[in-house]
Amino acid sequence: MQYAQKLHERLEVFRNCSQEEISSLVAAVIPQECLPNHFLQDLSDEDRILCYRAIMLSWGASQPTMVPTEMILRVVLADKHGKDALVQAERSYGYQLAIALCILLDDPAENSITITVSPLKRIQAESDCNMYNIFGIPTVRIDKETPSGREWWDTHVYNPDTKGMGTARHLLVTPEQIQKSWPAWQLSKLGVLMQDRDEHGFYNNIKRINVEEAHSVQTVSIPKYTHPYARSPWGRLSEPKIILPRRVLWKAFSTTVPPHVLKTLENKILDQDFVPIRQPYYRPYTMYATHQVYGSIEKLRNYECFLKLPFSPEGQPRVLILVDNPFLASRIAEYLDERLPPECQNAGIIRQYHSVMSNAYIKKVYDSLFKEDGVCRIVVAVLGDSVSVDFPNIDIVCLAGLPPTMVDALQSATSLKLYGPSLFLIFYEKWAKEIDQDEYEDGDSSDPDRVRDVDDLSPGAPKRSDKAPLSAIQLVQSSECLRCFYADYLGEDSPQATLYAGPFCCDRHDDGFELQNWLPGPIYTGPKTRDVPAESA
Image (cartoon, rainbow, N blue to C red):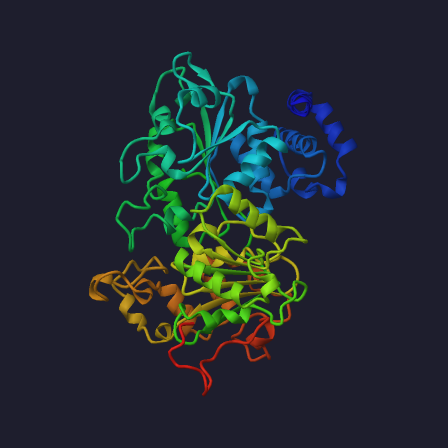
């Protein structure tokens, strides 16, 4: 607490000192090579001073390690000019710093509230810790595990009897917490507070709403093969947008915003005059490939190629395998663990990861993979629970089966390490080569991730082939460079988007690329003559 008090005093100085003082501080304290000087020089005096305050707030809070980039300062300027913003960049570019600086520039006496909508436990836990430990911003998480008792809410969020704001200035929430959600169709405690228009109530203290992983407004909300309302909170974020005052600022953050997703965000949560802030999707060291598995995705021997045998931690690359359901994740993890030497089995080298697991377990898996000396080498995760988690140090990402959208695929690829050769691999089954693309003509022509009319296809629960989006079928069937395919999908017109610095671009060029050379184990091609045909694996 002593540190937080000192931090508060330091930040207060940066907020309120004169223009001459803040300019002198930046010149004297900040290494000039760290500043985006060309950007700062082109600003008006007022905007430049605001950026100087943001720079010193960041420097002072991070003890000192962080200087905001041009992208982050553009977010700050959009906020202070009262504009919505769309930030298209990877999380590593500084989502949290941008959000934190907007909050730190607020007048503390106004008791303003910032709400950040975030989908996954890992992202929420990371943001929760950083917002207070680094920036001193009182932050609470609100999800289905949040205490429901009156005392907690009165203390941290808002006391309706005294009209007093709680201690938190930043709320990390899941989307269902700010609207009515299926199946109960009842407002959460936070949802009730957000609709109470009392002049001195919580409603009038909301200043901004940030939406992380904003592509989910499009990709998760469309009820293709679920109950029409089962996953609708993302698609219905327009409801709180309508209910809240127009002065509330909305910011959408995402790595991947192709044109059809942008259109949805404009219709749902962003004002017409929003500020676009964009970094090209650029992963120059990633090699892209696809592979038709033997039999089906369910055949466990197809995953032996990710395990180096004889096993040694030093020779085993870090691998992230993404599947479409937790049952398959469990089977793959158990199968690979059984392939390890007896002394290495059940030692945490192979791990599962999905949101149903406890926060403690999720943190344990993440930390084991994150730390250089961590024992975990292979994580088998459920795609929907992990595409937005910043897994570091990954050498190989395998998408086991066609993705529900190409956004999901590209989000998954961001888990790969930024420097040094890495591999993004999509496993697919034989039927993906056989589907006629003309069967997609009846869908929404503006949506490259549209599916075929399921009513005309398989009876009962949809098969993987029924759920295959057009974009994934085109990817598998095309001979086009995969890097160019992804750039076209995203609407990337920057030459940077198709450049690569690794040994190979993808598997679509006749340049000597061999998938086997980039996998630690042999690719399974089917049973040998003496193998038992009915083997379960």
